[in-house]
Image 1: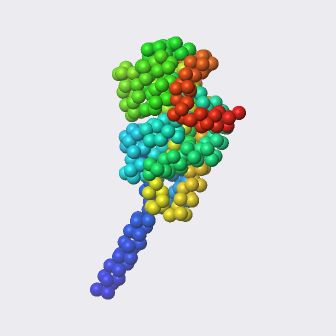
Image 2 (image 1 turned 180 degrees about the vertical axis):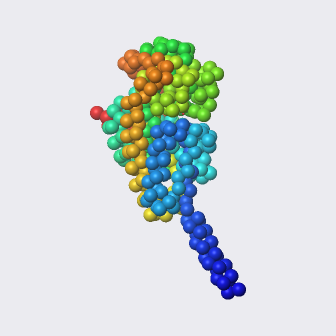
Image 3 (image 1 turned 135 degrees about the horizontal axis):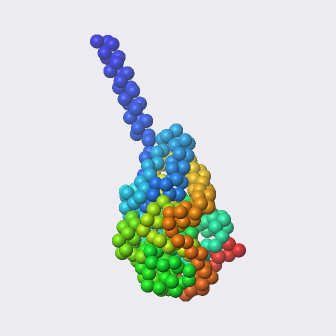
Length: 326
Ligand code: EAX
């Protein structure tokens, strides 16, 4: 009888210790819309590894890729309301929540990636990130999506005129839509999760995304022509729910998170730069016909977009980002 009681006591102690450990564990769900072999996923995996190592597995990052938890807009809303802890999204759909990121959406505004990184990592980038605080979110950092390139199923695009009448899927963003209207295309805003099918069924003729996304989303299966326009630079914003950040995480955990995020941000940008070197070759091998467009003609053609959105974006904000790259 004594032995049995002892055994029960030991079991209870072990059970209690187990629950305490389990209760201490913090799961951070992070959603994104692109493929498991994309730069977002790799960067987040790296962040998860760093967080796990620094906390002895106490903080666990759970990644939901390929729009499993909905569109970027859904994910931003989720993080804002606290039904989702974290997301990594292009800055463009944040236009539905704040105007502060719009400066990145102007065509060709970012030309020098390294100088832009420094600006985004400094006080100006912080100011922009802090615009989401009032929406219940904390902007942890600006990662990279990349320079956006144009693909379509109809014809090579070398000059703006080649775009006339093409239906192009875009992110939900007024400047992106305005830019493609100005270029003579039919802009079709649509969540990324619907894009492959839309291209396959010819609901749209084309789309624009960084090469890594064109490759990992297998767009070569449904798009023949790739034009290396680099017309927009898309930053990727890592957003976390504000209450979760301030109330669930301790000060020590926030410090660990901040340090891991900075390392993962640099790692992800490096990954993008490295992989980019092989992507044009890869996409060619997958059967795409590649065009080096006349960028000067595109730059000239989009100048009215700057006039149109100058007031909304803010003249000073535009000038600051341009000057930062001089
Ligand atoms: O942020 O929607 C898009 O085209 C984005 O580039 C993608 O979701 C990653």
